[in-house]
Every structure is written in structure tokens, then in C-alpha cells.
Length: 312
Ligand code: SF4
Ligand code: MG
Image (cartoon, rainbow, N blue to C red):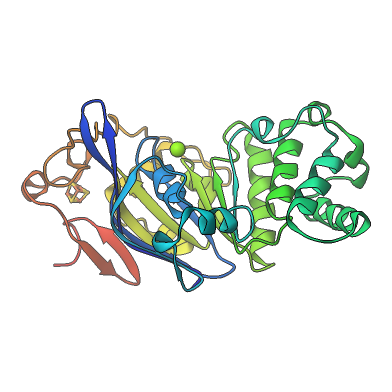
């Protein structure tokens, strides 16, 4: 087990009061596994991921984050900074913001490595070439400037930089959102390749069907709650939670031709969440109990589900 999150609860102070952006989330990531955290915007996915490396503006109210045997919440700022970029690295949505437009790709990559490791420039350059191979970028691109590359190529460069210091965990927040679907899938293919090199990945995405094909595990978040967590192939074969089912039905699938059924409504305002199950106003299977009581986490066939339809 590389990462274990237990009962994590993160609170924000918003203009309209306190909100729990992440509420009682427990999950784990094994070494060399790809976990996709899926859900619509504003459901707490990014807050969950950023809380791991303390880049979330929210305050952790409760819970534990154990990474590689260390309790991350007990580390001081300096220790967290050392962890970031080295053991845990990040890839964001817009690759342009992470690249220096005035520096050649190769120079930027070499500098990143030399800033952290005492090796020669030649050794760093060799590693850069190896990294470009891994992400499928021709080596002569070393001499290109960011604007000379396509969006997909830039994102590959960012991924190469993110793994240049041999991290154990890579956190990627909507890294493919700005890219077309074929390029998105290529990026996911690269992630899958990285997991075979024993890098664990947390991928934050709103595209469940795309993620499911390449992930080992899926975590579905809604309104700060973890609604379903389990092996990707199980979730794909039989999504249990009505929200997971809704997500799968609401977006086109790259591999399967089927009718799209949009999810009705929007995620709730977290300053004023619905009573009972937070999904009940949108749930096609809602029962009388759902607006009155908070559903517990239950285990069903090696999967965690938070829904009254299960566990009785
Ligand atoms: Fe739907 Fe009720 Fe399950 Fe919530 S607890 S997802 S409202 S059936
Ligand atoms: Mg987000």
C-alpha cells in the first residue's frame, strides 16, 4: 500500500459559510496502480488530491493520510515541500502554465533534474532523452520551444518532467481536458505505461468511460462524498451507485456505441447540501429514506458503495 487515506474531511470557509468539500473519504492506492477519481466539477476531486500534498486552501478537519508509511498531516512545511516534486509530483490541466515559453524543452527538463540531483549535465541529458522516449516524443524535440509543439505534445513533455525525479506518486488533475479524445487516450496509455514502471497515479477526471479503460481502481465522488470505490473493471461491468450509473450513461464512450442519457440537474451548493443522501434530488432510484437519513459506506463484493440500495 503506497497511499492510505482514512476518513479525510476538508473544510473551506466560503462567502456563504463553511463547506465540507471532502467529507469522510477513505481510499487507498497500491504501488504501480492507476486510480481515477471521477465526478462532475465541484464534487471535491481536486480538493481530495491537493490535500495530499497540502496544496488545497481547505483545512483538514479530520482523518489520516499515510504515504509510504509516513503520516503526511504531521509533516512540517519544509518536509512537505521536499516531498512535492520528488516523491509526489503533479500534472495540471494546462501544460502552457507549467512550461517556460522562452526556454527550449531540453533545457527546461535538464534544469529541473539538475535543480534536485547532483549529476552531470550529460547524465541529465541522457535521462531527458530516455524520458522523451517513454512519453513518445522524438528526441530532436529537445531543441523546440513550447509553442512549436501541439497541445498533446506539450502535455507529454509535462508528464516527462513530472516523472524526471522518479516519483512514487503522480497526481494528474484533468490533464487531458483540453485535448481531443484520441490524444486523451494516448495520454492515458502513457499513464498506464508509467504504472508498469511502478509509479502510482491518481488521475482526476470527469470522464468516467475514458478513465475506466486504463485505470486499476475508480473512486466516484459526489458533493464531497465518496460514492463508490472499487476495481475499474468491476465498476465498468456493473456500476452499483446510481450516480456512477448516471455518469457512465451521460458521456459518449470511445469504444462502445450507445445512447447518451444526460444526468439531470447539477451538483448541490455545498454551503447548503441536501438532507440525507446528497444525491437524492437527482437520483432516479431515490426512496423515502434517502432524503431523511445519511447513507453509510457499505462493502459490496470488494467494493465500497454509499447508497441505501445496498447492504441490507
Ligand atoms: Fe439514490 Fe438513495 Fe442511493 Fe442516494 S441513497 S444514491 S438517493 S438510492
Ligand atoms: Mg477540479
